[in-house]
Length: 328
Image (cartoon, rainbow, N blue to C red; front, side):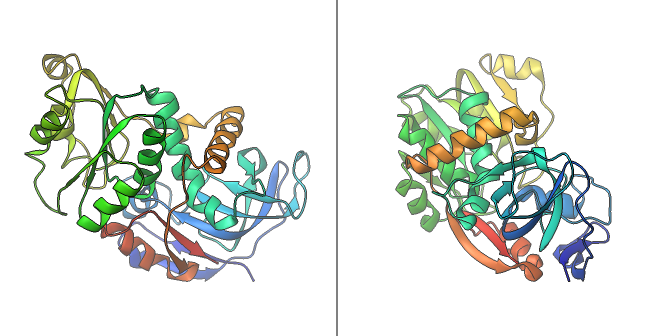
């Protein structure tokens, strides 16, 4: 019998329950996938808690790797037994098996394991969006990366450093500072969980010789937003792509102009890969970057799928480095 983790209503991690879930045959255009590894992302937390409204009851999860069990009519390009990964909606990855739109699947190359793929595909495509669509890296530029030892942060830091960008990482512990440095961060600033960001911009300006950074990649949100703006160089860009501390404040366009002709963007990986053609080409680039050593799949812990609540509590503690995986 197939099982999944079901949320009847939004709430704390305990709303996630392990339930039996009969699985019908795949509909036309769908593939049935047996999951082998499932990635946990902060968007799952936002949806579970109600920060990002979704219909309930709901099964969470955007990121997983697995094997094709069956194909619905009209599906081409896949075969039973083939290794694949999914990276976006509809949600439902917190399950032993599921039916998924075939045009939203990507084929896994032999060079990447299922666990590495589940740790990498959603986070890697987020990093891909940040270095390909949001801002094209310029060698010797300075950038600021918040949560530099997190799931996206480690990938992003390594990718930027590999192409000659000077990364200033922001982390919450000295252990995380070491992880960010190991991925190529030029300098790391430690701000403990719950600590103040008021001195961050002055440190950034000192490190950059007074100019500030070209881009601030901010996944923290409310607590770090003002400090990120103050850390930017003239005509700098704040890419606010997460909100682990809460929603960022409203932006006054006159104010960001006064601060130095700044720009603010709220990019979403779901928009980045909405076109199936873009999804396939971007995933191909991510896997190539992995093969070339430009990025790594950092796995912090593997947790049984039925214990998904434990994974969410761990993620919300902001103590993790890299990806959390759920194993069916």
